[in-house]
Image (cartoon, rainbow, N blue to C red; front, side, top):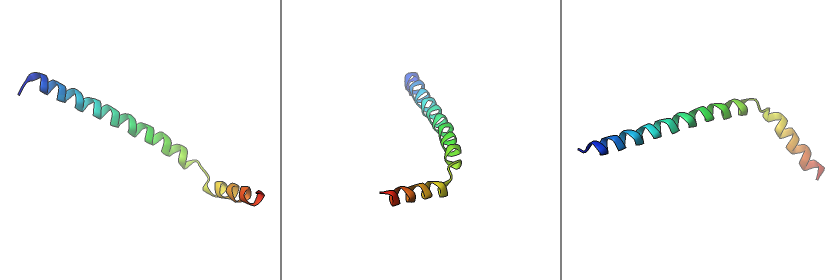
Length: 53
């Protein structure tokens, strides 16, 4: 096995790991934002909007 192949594979794995880590962080941020949404309020607003049409 060539050193260049091993190095390339290691770099690719590290890039994948960092991208996954970044995606997990963004998912946590989005999840926190979604947890703050009051679903009942959204449904109420949609119904009021439909009735107003």
